[in-house]
Image 1 (tube, one colour):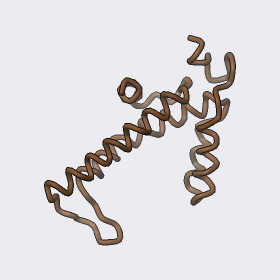
Image 2 (image 1 turned 90 degrees about the vertical axis):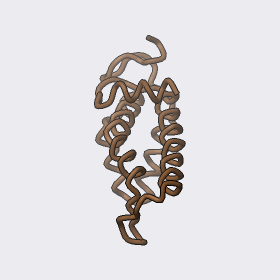
Image 3 (image 1 turned 60 degrees about the horizontal axis):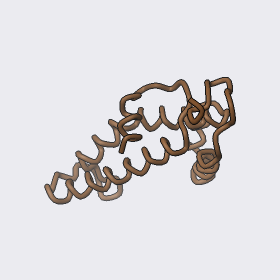
Image 4 (image 1 turned 60 degrees about the vertical axis):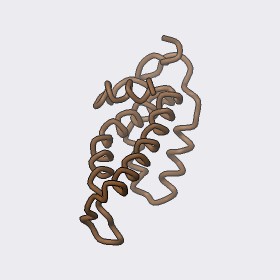
Length: 124
């Protein structure tokens, strides 16, 4: 949970580096809270404003919109940790293949020592 809060405190910080642990724990809690908000939407019977193909559940949608920038920021810092630019996240726009390539990048271990994006967070 501390990594989730740490990422939220660095809401729009796109510089520096993020460890694998920081990135993956943030993603884990994003999914857990997302499930919670979907359940709350169902329990509260919030109106489904969208269509059947594209439902718009207010609580879940507001939650994901609020986390859009922190998700991009921690993803950028994670890519910096392996020596890549944050612009690599544009691969998400390529269906399936782009997400798989990014998944492989996010799994890779940190670059040892200092790189162009800063010191290794493990060594601090």
